[in-house]
Every structure is written in C-alpha cells, then in structure tokens.
Image 1 (cartoon, rainbow, N blue to C red):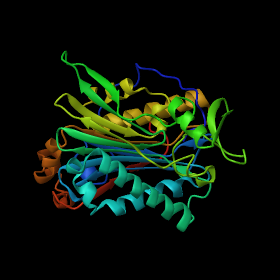
Image 2 (cartoon, one colour; image 1 turned 90 degrees about the vertical axis):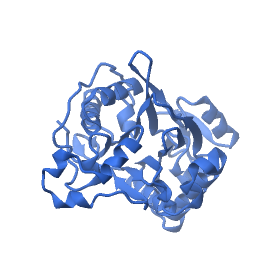
Image 3 (cartoon, one colour; image 1 turned 180 degrees about the vertical axis):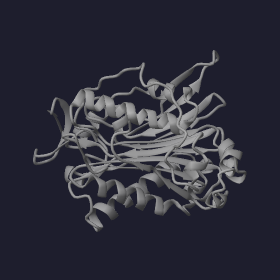
Amino acid sequence: MGQCCAGAKDSDAPRSSSIADPLYADGSTLRLLYRNVAAYSCHGFSGGREKQNQDRGALVLNFAGNPEQVMLLVCDGHGPNGADASEGVISTFLDSTAQNQVLAKCRESGKDALMEELGKLIREAEESVFISRRKGRSSGTTFTAVIVCGEDLAFTANVGDSRSCIAVEDPDGGFDAVDLTVDHVAAGNAQERERIEKAGGRISKFGGSHRVMSPTGECALAPTRSVGDIEFGQTVVIADPEVTEVKLTAAHKYIVTASDGLWEFLDRQTVMNQVVNCENVSGAAMDLVKYSQSEWFKTCGGYCDDISLVVCELPFKNWMDMRDTLPNDLAEQGDKKIQTVRRSENQEVIRCHTLTGLQN
C-alpha cells in the first residue's frame, strides 16, 4: 500500500508491445497460457532501494474443486508486518476453499450464501493469522477476488482498496472498462466514512488525506476495511467482504484484479486499453508493471509501491481447453515438463510470478 498519493493519471501511456519470454517457469501453467492469462507481482522501492514485497496474488483454476470456476485474487499487505499479513491470509483462505461445498457450487449457492461463506472464511483467516498465530502485528491486508462461473456469471468479493475491473466490447468494436469493485477508503467513500463513525471510529486528515485513526490516535489507515489491523477495532475496520453478482455476456472480454500499486497512476481505461491492444495478456501485464514503476518514480522520487496483478481472458473455457492440447510452438520446445500440465478437477492455485528490480 503506497505512501505517495499524487494520483496522477495518463490515459495515453503505456505503449503496446509483446514479449517472447513471459519469464514464467518452463512447464508451468502460466507459461502454457501466457497469451490468455497473466499473474505478476513486483516489490516496491523506498529511498530508491528495493523493499520487501507485501503483495500476494493468485490465479485459481478449478476453484473449490469445480472445473467450471476460476478465481482471481490479490491481497495487498500493509504495516510493519504486511508481508506476513497478506501471505497468512491468502494461504489460510485458499487452504479452506479446496473442498468447500458452498464455494464449489457458486452458481447454485447464490450471492447471499456466498457473502456469508466468504465472510466466514475471511474472518477465520483473520482469527488464525492475527490472533491465534499472532502474525502480522500492527498490520493488515486487502482482499479482492473475482470468481468466474462458466461463461455467463461472476461474483466479486472485496475488502479494502485493491480493485477489479472488466473490459466490455461495444457495438463499434471498441472497449469500455468498468469497475467491478468499489474501493473501501476513508478519502473517497462517503458510505464507508459514515459506517466508521456510526461504529464509534474516528476519521481525520493525516498526510493530506482522510484516514481512519486508531483509538490511541497513533496510527492512521487509508482503507476502511481490512483483514487484520485489529488494533483499530474489529467492528470499526471490518473484514466483511462486499460481494456483488455480475452477469457476463459475449461482450465481456478481460478481467484485471490488481493492488493499488497499479491503480495509483493508471485509470481503468488505460489498463484495459493495454490489455486489449497487446498481442498477449502477459505482455500487456508486463508493460503495465513497467509503466507503473516509471510513473511512481517520476512522481514520488525514490518511492514505488508493490505492484501485483492477475489478468484473464474471457470466456475462460477457450484457454482452459488448451491445457488438454499443447500448442505447436510450445510442443516444439521439447520440454517434457510441459507434458505434465493437464486438466484436473482439483483446485489448482497458481501464485503470481515474482519479479525483481526495475522492469525496463
């Protein structure tokens, strides 16, 4: 979660390109599907030096054991132990979903049951990480997910200020970017400010922006919802996800879920223009990381936030089928490890590929 909040936008950058090497490991699912999906996470910088990456992200195939479901998930940790917070929450949550009967049938379960079940699992992860194991002290994490169910339905779950958006093709062949989630932040969400105050919390300006203040007034938090940050009071800064249902059509083409390190200087239309116009999704994602880093340094001197994003093309059935038949260019590499990538009904968690340094 970033410290520089200049909020500059430039809808004309970055420029389209493609990459011959998406940097994913040989034989990995990401390598096989690099034209259709992307999952990258890069540490930030402070004082011009590399800092610990507090982001975590994953693309989950066969989510909850259902081959008709895919999840995109990003957790952005913050605080002195933010990496422990995000890692603890994402790993604990995903361990609990592998055979969850409510999540295995998201379509049949419906929005209300999903909101209840996801909320329960997120709060259980919070209890396990921050209270039972006492990890992530004085820290917390966002939690932003999209569950895609077949070709016509998706659900979002959001806690905090990471964000998901979707590209929608218009009748003229252009694309509009539409937010799937609403940021839970004190600075820009009047409903969340009202909820905080009704719960007995306090919001004040801190560092030039409205933030939630801890009971002692010693700590300030930008997001109004977080998994963790229990020092602020669990009825004030809540871990309850905001869940929405999205009807998908043939016009919906791409989903991007990313931490605020990406969104600080790139608006949703800029991001989706890059994804739509690039020759492959992984190339677009890499270009977005590069441009975001350059904007952070240009605006904030030696500071750059961690940047993580997970991207997938819709409908996912088109590229999921590729896992059963190797494309010619990959088969010709003669890499036997690629032969092990096959369709399975088990939940498959694919963590973001870790990037290091400046992506020039």
